[in-house]
Amino acid sequence: MNAHIRVRFAPSPTGHLHIGGARTALFNYLYAKRQGGIFVLRLEDTDIERSTQESVDMILKDLNWLGLKWDEGPEVGGEYGPYKQSERAEIYKNAVEKLINNNQAYYCFCSPAEIEDRRQQLSQAGKTYKYEGTCQSISLEEAKSRVKAGEEHVIRLRVPTSGETIINDKIRGKVVFENKVLDDFILVRSNGSPTYNFAAVVDDSAMHITHIIRGDDHLSNTPKQILVYQALQATLPTFAHVPMILGADRNRLSKRHGATSIGAYAQEGYLPETMINYLALLGWSWDDKTTLFTLNDLENKFSLKRVNQSPAIFDNDKILWMNGVYLRQASNETYINLAIKQLLQAGLIKEPLNTETKAWAAKIVLVVKSKIKKLSEIPEQVSFFWEDQLELTKEAKEKLSEAKPYAEWFKTLHKKLSMLKSFETVELEKVLRNLSEEAGVKLGVLVHPLRVAVTGRINSPGIFEVLELLGQEKVVQRLAAALLEIDITV
Image (cartoon, rainbow, N blue to C red; front, side, top):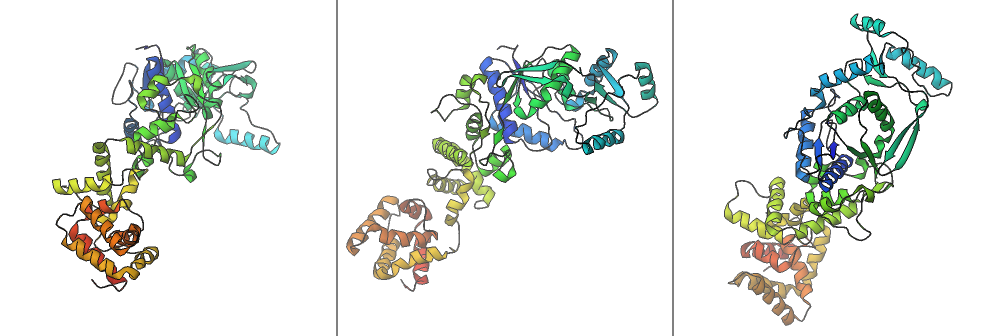
């Protein structure tokens, strides 16, 4: 293991783990695995009002569901903890005191109201506000005296007014920012909490993070963070800003495009294998033809060199197709266990399950395995097996009425099905095929109305499998009731 390579995923626990965050976690994880390095998980929970333990639990659960195991972090530990920013207050305090004593940072006593007033004045004049450095000249002795007296303040970084801050980005190349466009930004808020740009740098430096791989929406933060690194005389990490994820309309991915959190996709019946594979393709590719990758494949193939600069488009149709592929590839045992959970959630079956019920349910879900694209489709596809009374749609009734011209043959079918000694697929198919030959009609003439009669639907899994699984008693009863619906008495 190349312990020198250290990457991190540092989510803010203020909600669910979203697609963009999960993609960032994956890219960091894959880079660490490919390089033999360390993958660190850190929780940036300094937003006291919005951070919750519930969000922490969801993030950890979703990362575990995806199979992204961290080497250091919550629940795992490590020598550079604690791994929650809320538990690192003393570390930030020491760091900012070092900056103040070295004249790299200073106390600012300008009130928010004063700053907002200046901002408004400049805005009315058509200019952009930039903090003027009003408190830069206050001596450290005076500033500390005012702080001791309880005067409200923040702590700002002294930003150079000339020169450039350069980012040598592994994906975007050389990116240059003019220092004169930056102001003396806040490191510590008036309530004593560190700002993101300060805490992230202190933590990344203390945890010896060598590569920071994150979304390019963070690119504007990077020059500020580099200036903090320089002020702390800390080693700069390598930056890599991955492209944004957009919806099909090329706007930033949001709820209007559908589910955006990993938990929601898991709830809808997507597999972790699907999510890992699809997330990897959001900005990265191996070649122009390979689409399917296991996590192990990705661990062996991933590199930042193959990450694109252009935005990634999230395609709901493609991820749905991919999930269908992984469902079909899943072992029957794995598939059955996942499918039965869906039946339980839908209330079609109830715990505790006896052996007979579980075996019957397993056979039912297997008949739709090749047709579904996500697990949540299963209950709707097979619910007719448990329905006491079928509700026929107008379309289904029209299809059922096609049996009217062949009333005598359907009466014969009902009789033959009632008398069968073996109600298995082979025997059932033999009955239907022989009867269609006797009637001189295509098999579909009998099968289509029969399907509606026993399932209440125009489409269903294979009719012979359906008949066997429903069982003789239920099939005979449903066929009789459906024929009576169109005035055919058996």
